[in-house]
Length: 222
Ligand code: PRT
Ligand code: ZN
Image 1 (cartoon, helix red, strand yellow):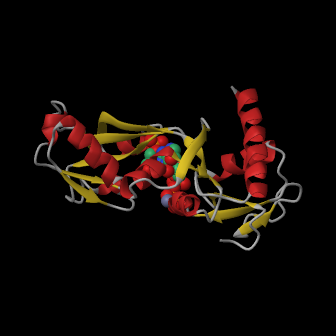
Image 2 (image 1 turned 120 degrees about the horizontal axis):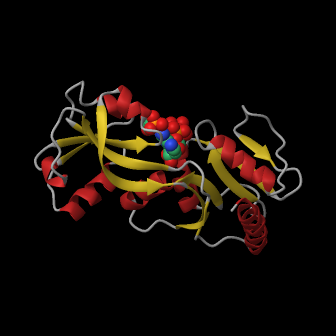
């Protein structure tokens, strides 16, 4: 546990697609951060909370371990984490409506697609192997899932796998790589998560106050 059990610890992405909207949400909730962009942590001047700037992939772990009481992360990252960790001590307290995207199955433009059965016995490259494996099971299809940590859209050209499953927002990346989306696997948006581990009474009360401020911000944005 971090030194001060009476302060809240909030994990947000340091740099990436979630960082600006995460900072903005905390700001709109009235939290004034002390440090600039390059710090790893920031003290909130006017609320008993510290912000941790981390990789998005680490956020579910920090919250489930109770190192941070709150975090903001993509639903896709949280879901993959949940499928890998049994029943982690983390709950979604608010969908945020930002960073919307879909995990989509894609195939080379020229290939024939006759539905999920076209995947039988094939290879699929993805950064989300557990979400893809669950979907394949739901479809009753057996295929080999190949985990890649990035540049998934190159897999067909590199002959790693003829199919990929990757996040899509505008579709421009698929198009630029000669791929077409053939199925929706998981729809995602950023979510505010909270630890379900026991925390101090003071931290719990601050957490409730933070949550109601954030809910207030979200309501005015609806
Ligand atoms: O460094 P760190 O590990 O923290 O960041 P990261 O590189 O893992 O994540 P980042 O910042 O790229 O994305 C963070 C989260 O943003 C994701 O987990 C999603 O929840 C959400 N998000 C929303 C997206 C996209 N839209 C998105 N389009 N994440 C990634 N993409 C990528 C996608 O992987 C593909 O390469 O953008 C490309 C496709 O975009 P379009 O517009 O061409 O379709
Ligand atoms: Zn990441």
